[in-house]
Every structure is written in C-alpha cells, then in structure tokens.
Image 1: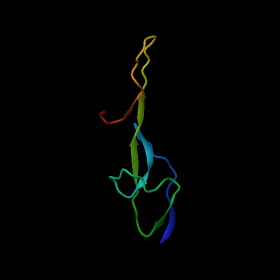
Image 2: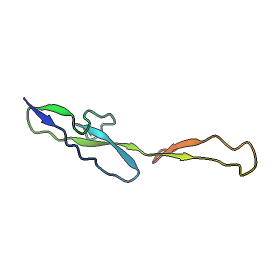
Image 3: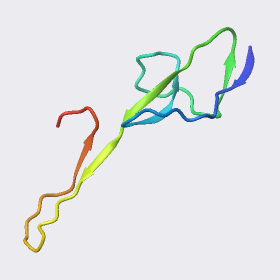
Image 4: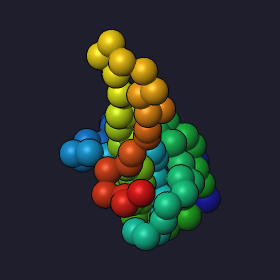
Length: 79
C-alpha cells in the first residue's frame, strides 16, 4: 500500500460547485478532498462530486411593505 496525494485541481461545471472526490460515479457524499492523502493498493478512478449551486431570491417591496422572505433555490431542483 502506497500513500498517494489526491489532485489539488478544482473541477469546473456550470451551475454546480465542486465538492470533492469519491470512488463511485453516483456518489453524493465526498470521500476525498483535493490535497488529501489516501492509500493506493492498485488502479483507482476517482469521480468528481457535484453540489447544485444555491441561488437566492431577494424581494424588495420598493416603498411598500410585507415583501416575501428571501428564498433559497438550487439549480435543477423544484421547490
């Protein structure tokens, strides 16, 4: 087993934030962060884990009152 350093480059994808790396292409949880050390005992493929970007909607009553509260929305999610 040989210690190995996870690449420190940050991946880029429109409307998503790069969260880290996992050994599963369907993972939603990060196993490794850039710069982490892991034990390598054979070939491995690490997959980027993406989190949808958060967008905020602010309301301004423009001189009026009772504007709605600020809302958080996430790319690709209905709410």
